[in-house]
Length: 233
Image 1: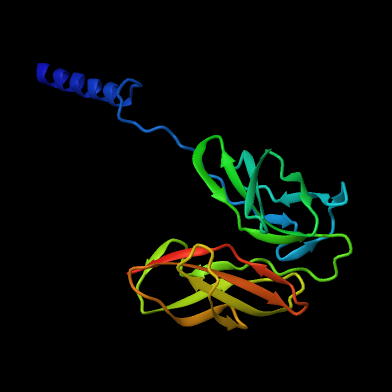
Image 2 (image 1 turned 120 degrees about the vertical axis):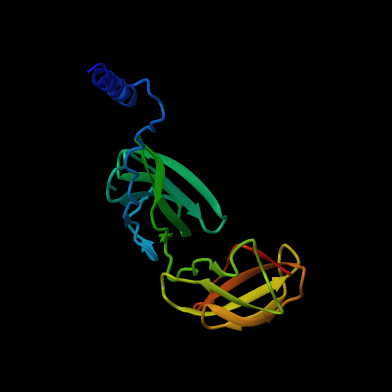
């Protein structure tokens, strides 16, 4: 009988130790991470005509997105695609935000959703638009974005296949010029394409290359991409 009582006493102590707040070894609840927001306006690859003019050179643009599940707040990122300058705006819990932008200028934007109960965040798609300019008839193409080779990648030769994305509000891109060499501002044109890729471009081993794409449209407008970089071995 004494042995049975002793056994129950030990079992009870084990339960108390396991369930008590001082037992340790548990992990805190991290909460549900937010879901990426769905963007609404300005529309992707479009001309933004809804901005309110505030001066000869600027207009106020309203960014809008749908609420995302588990999100308590949002951060808006707007990038000037001409200067490659990105600005960050804390939007709080609202799903629209006004930003004053330069007229006749290409921009990209996206939303980062945050939650108070989770450390993880969620990033939306990235959209591009042209902020309408006074009297603009034809828009300059959006600067091309690198697809391959990826930025700062290391690849093997002796040839490289290049790919990028290009778009234009007027949908009248006619060609792309690819510039590539070992200087940080490449000036050597290595090819022209009517689609967004050029294959089998010769490279040397153990070198650092820089490249960019100049996009041309049917009205003679051009846009330079940022300069991208890769290494060979």
